[in-house]
Length: 284
Ligand SMILES: C[S@@+](CC[C@H](N)C(=O)[O-])C[C@H]1O[C@@H](n2cnc3c(N)ncnc32)[C@H](O)[C@@H]1O
Image (cartoon, rainbow, N blue to C red; front, side):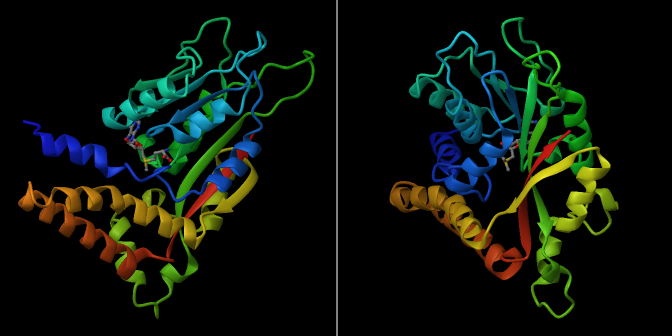
C-alpha cells in the first residue's frame, strides 16, 4: 500500500535535479547544437526520465511553420518521471502533438507516426543503455531505429545522429596504488559479468561506437563540477524532505537521512573522480 510519505518521497527524490545525469545547462546546449536539429528532424529520447533535454530540443526548433514535421518523443518506464515530463509539456504550452511522452520499455518502442510527421533521424540515450542490456546492444538498436532525414533537394546526402551518455572508468580507477579504485569498481561492476557488460575506458567506449558502425562527431565528458552538482542535487530533494518532515514523521525522516548520508559516503570514499561520464554525438 502506498502512503502519503511514499508519494512525497517519490516526488522529492529528483526534485532538485535538472537532468538525471552530470550535465550543466551550457553543456546540454552544446550537445544539442551538435545534434543539428531542423524543423524536419524528429527526435526520440530512450530512457528520457522527465525529458528535460528533449524539451529543450523541442524548444530549439520553431513550431509555428507549416514546414515543421519534427516530433519529439520521450520513452521511459517510470510513471513518476513521466508525470513530471507531461506537466512540463502543459506548463510550457507545447503542443502534445509535437512532444509526446510514452510509458514503455525503450527497446520495444517503434515509430507509429503519420504522414505529416517525419520518422526520427535523431536519438538520445543518456544513462539508459541498461534498457537494452548493455552499451553495444543500445548502439546497434539505435542504428536499426533511425532513418535518414528527408533530403531537401532529393539528392543531398544526409546524416542520422545519436547522442549517447555513458559511464567510463578514468585511468586512475585501475591504478593498483589508488586506495579508492577497488571500492569504486565494486560499487558499479559485478567482477563475474562478461566484458561487454563491464564499464569501459573512454577509449574503449569510442571503439564500441566505431564497432557498431557509428562515427564520433563530438566527444565531451562531465567535469568535476558537473559531477558534484549532480551528486548534491541527487540528495538535496530527499534531504530537504527529511528536514521538513522530521517532526511529523521522525522514523521515516531518519531513514531517508541515513540513506542519503550513506550514498554520499559511497561517492566521496568511492567513485568521485574515478567514474567518468562521456557524451558522444554519433553520426552515420
Ligand atoms: C539515469 S536515468 C537518465 C534519464 C535521462 N536520460 C536523463 O539524462 O535525465 C535512466 C532512466 O532510464 C529509465 N529506464 C530504466 N529502464 C528502462 C527501460 N527498460 N525502458 C525505458 N526506460 C528505462 C529510468 O526510469 C530512468 O528514467
